[in-house]
Amino acid sequence: MDIALYFKGIVDADRCAVVICNLEHEIIYMNPAACARYVKWGGAELVGKSLFDCHNAASREMIHKVAAWFQESSDHNIIYTSRNEKENKDVYMVALRNEVGELIGYYEKHEYRNQETEPLYHFQ
Image (cartoon, rainbow, N blue to C red; front, top):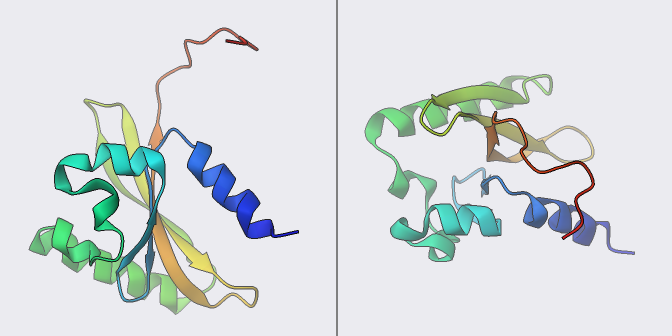
């Protein structure tokens, strides 16, 4: 059983954008929601490129600071990075660690705060 397929399935089914980067700040994976969200910047073509190509100098500096903070301690795993009032969402950077707690990368996670409007257990 390849457990990685299950994790990929979870991330791919998420309606929120998830962008995964390695420690060289290269985008190594984007879920379908992220590909759609960033289509005007290249969408899926961003995979394999530097995350810094998509950010201004101030953002690049903060990404470096967060990555350094993640490296400081295995207890440093998530940080709130921005709020988008227009979309009612918060954005986080989350550390990715291996089995022994070593930092192997990070990802950006969008979380929308809108109340669900779909009825409970609504089968379409």
